[in-house]
Amino acid sequence: MTSIVIPAHDEELGIGRLLTAVLGTAAHGELEIVVVCNGCTDRTAEVARSFGDAVVVAELAEPSKAAALKHGDHLATTFPRIYVDADVEVDAHSLRALAATLDRPGIEATGPERILDRSGVSRPAKWYYDVWEQLPGVCEGLFGRGVIAVSAAGHERIRALPEVMSDDLAISEAFGPRERTITAGAQVRVRPASTWRALVSRRVRVTIGTGQLAAAGMVRPGVQTRGSDLVRVGLAHPRLALRIPFFAATAVCVRLATRRRVRRGLGGVWVRDESSRGADGPAEKTDGHAERGVS
Image 1 (cartoon, helix red, strand yellow):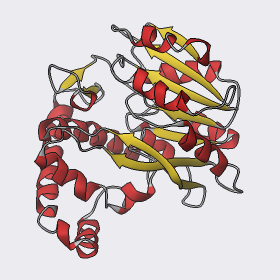
Image 2: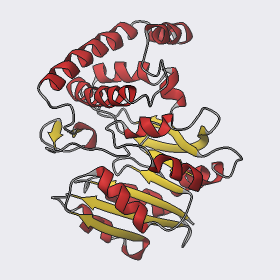
Image 3: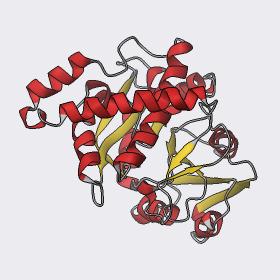
Image 4: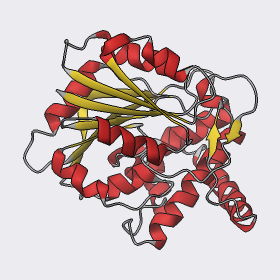
């Protein structure tokens, strides 16, 4: 059995899609699925409970992913353990492959191959992601996938991590290159920000989180994108040559927006991108609290 922990805050639009994919080809008793609905004001818990005994559903009043993950860990009973964001799509075949990878000697953490679903994404956002996907750290790291699997020993290591905004990067950096890997054949479908404005807001959040990790000495030197990285991407992928300047300009906008946000004292406030969830209304949502924990 493999334990799957899914923190979910107002995810009624995605949780059913995710659970349908996970349970579609899973054998009976193969997966222990724990959904922790934290601070939900919608039908997330109701939708999760509609899957019956196949899913354990818990509810917390506090809209905190960190608290949800901690509670999910308390309810989960076995390893390997896979943390899955509620707004991605991954199936039992991929989860099975991740668990098998952790049987390899020395591998304590793994993630699936990332498929960015560009349907409905604006052209400027697509240009940014076309370059972003080719960056060395993005290709090799466990972050930005919405799914991270750890062994029992790997779990003990990440339990000691402080609560930070860029939690998936923190987990990725907790393991050396030989201790973590991307599992070939395991795939997760991720919906990126659909507009350039939403993309900038999302990147501001990531930049603040990366800064927190850097200040704590929790990331390797060079983990942030450097000009040399963009040069290498351009040489390896000439078709992206005209998009790299746009990527760099967006990075500058993100840096300036990050400084403004920090000056306003909002560095620890979690701003969620709603554009990637197919929801009507504003492109982003401020939950009004400092969010910390595995992302």
